[in-house]
Length: 603
Image (tube, rainbow, N blue to C red):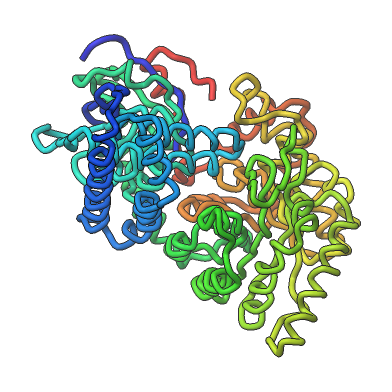
C-alpha cells in the first residue's frame, strides 16, 4: 500500500460498494501511422480491411453468445447488433475504402481517420445520451484497428482476487467480457449515466463510478481501491480502517437489500394509516421486471424519448409504440402507466426533429413546444397510446408546459387523432387521462388554472430546481448552488400540492427528490401522497413511509417552510431523522468514514 488515502469524486452510475485490486487498462493501439501505398497494392489493402471486418464481427457475436444471463443478452443485444450493422454498413465501409483508394493510404489510417471524423460530428449534440452515440463509431473503429493490428484481448485469468477495472473508457464488448469474471467494480474516466459501460455495470450489478478524468494516471496495479457507486467516489490507498469500514458496509447493504426485497407485498402506509403510492420511473421496458420485483404500484413516468433514441435515426412505428406500451401496462396491471410524450429537444437534442440549431436549446423548442411544432412526429405515438388505453390504465403527460393554451392546443390535436382512429374503425379511449409536468416556475404559479384543464400533475423537481434557482447542476462551478431544499423550492412544492388538492386532481413527484429516502418525510409533510422513483429504491422509500405518522411529518414541514436557508432545512431534517429508529438505508457512508481520510465531506 502506498501513499495517503485519496478520494476521487465522480458520477455514481451503478450502485453498490466494491473493494479490490486495481488493474488499469488503457485502450491504446500501436501508433497509427499513415503509410503511402502504390496503386498496385490498394486492392490488397481493401481486402485486409474486409478481413478485419469479418474478424471483428465474429468477435462481437462470440461476446453475445458468451456466458451471460438472458436479461443481459437482451439488454446488450441491440447495441452489439448495432455494432455489427455498422461493420456491415456500406456507407461507412465505402467511406473507409474510398479513403484508402483516393489517398493511397493503409487501412489502419483510413479506419482511424474516418471513424474519428464521424464520431466528432456527434460532439455537437448537447444531450449526453445522444452524444454518447459517437461511442458506437469509436467502438467499431476499435474493433477494426484491433483486428488489423493483431491486438489480442486482455486476459485476467492469471490475476488472483477481486479486480477493480480502471480505464479511461471501455468498448462495449470489453465491458461485457471483463465484467463477467473477477471484475467486481469499474472506475472509468469517461462516460455517463447512459453510456454502454454504465448499462453493462447495472445489468451485471457491478458497482461503477464514471467521470473520473485522468484516473488511469493516478492508479498503479498494486493499489487497493474502493468503488462507492452510491456516492460516486473512488478511494485510492485506503487505510486498513477504511477498508474494514467499507467491508462492513458491504455486509450491511447485502443484508438490507434482502430484507427490503421482502417488503414487496407490504402496504405503503404511514403509521397512522395514510396510503402513499410508490410508482416507478422507467427508461427502458426491461426495467418493468425490477419495478414489479421491488413492489412499485405502477409506472409514474415512462420517458418515451428513449424509444426514439434507441431507434434513431429512424422513427419508431405505431406498432413498436403499441408493443412497448402494452408490455408496460400488462407488467404492472392493474396499476397505471404514465407515458410522458417525447421530451426531445433541449439537451436531448434530436436533429432529425429540430430542423434548426438553437443557441440556447434548454430554453428553446423542446417538450410540449416541440410536440405542437412537429405534430406529424407525435401523431404516431398518440395513436398507439389511445389504442392501448382502451384495455389498460394508460395515461398521457405533457412535459415543459408553461401556458394553459398549450394544453388546449394539445387536446384539439388529440381530438383530431381520435376522430381519425374512429373513422378507421379502431376502438379508442376518448376520455383519456391527461396530465402535465410541473417543472418550471411559470407552471407552478398558474397551477390553479392548469388544474382545471387536466386530470393530474407530476412535479419534475430536476428541472424545477434548475429553472427556479438558475443553476445548471451539471456545471461544477455552481453545483453547490443546486439546492433541492432551498426555501423557494419547498414553497413551490407546497403551493402546487395545495392547488391540485383544491381542484380535486392527483399530484405526484417524479424527480430525484422522490428517490432520496431522507427527503421522504419532508415531501409527505408537504402533502405529497404519490412518489415516482427508480424501481430499486422503492423498498427503502416504503420503509421510511411506514416509519412515521402524517401528523408529525406535517409539523416537520411547517417548521422547515419557515426557515430562511437550505442549510437550516438540512439541519432540521437531520435532527428529525436522528430520532428515527427505522434502519432505512441512507445510501452513502457518512462523515465517520470520510474522516478516516482526514477529509471533510462536502457533498
